[in-house]
Image 1 (spheres, one colour):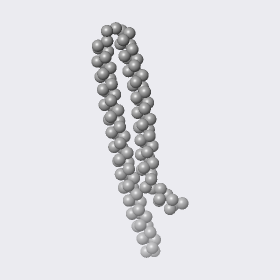
Image 2 (cartoon, rainbow, N blue to C red; image 1 turned 180 degrees about the vertical axis):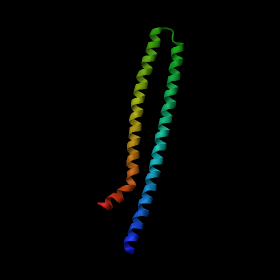
Image 3 (cartoon, rainbow, N blue to C red; image 1 turned 135 degrees about the vertical axis):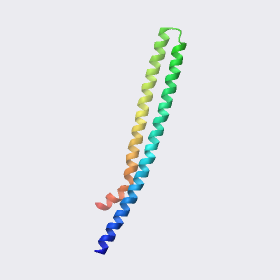
Length: 109
């Protein structure tokens, strides 16, 4: 009976420690994602502001259309690249959050 209680206590402590490690990984990953999203927002705003300045300075309708088309193309490409990067960060976050539990899952098998 005492051995069972000690085993249960040991596994409970191990699970709690693993949960804390996983939470630390989640916090770190969430911070990386938030930082990346903030940087993207800043770059996007700067690119939009620069485009508005170019449009205001344009001398013809054709030039305005060209500037707008270039901006749309660059914005789309930047969005796709950023979405891919954020997706990779989320995948890494999931891997890192699960990693502390691998040993417990292996013991359970």
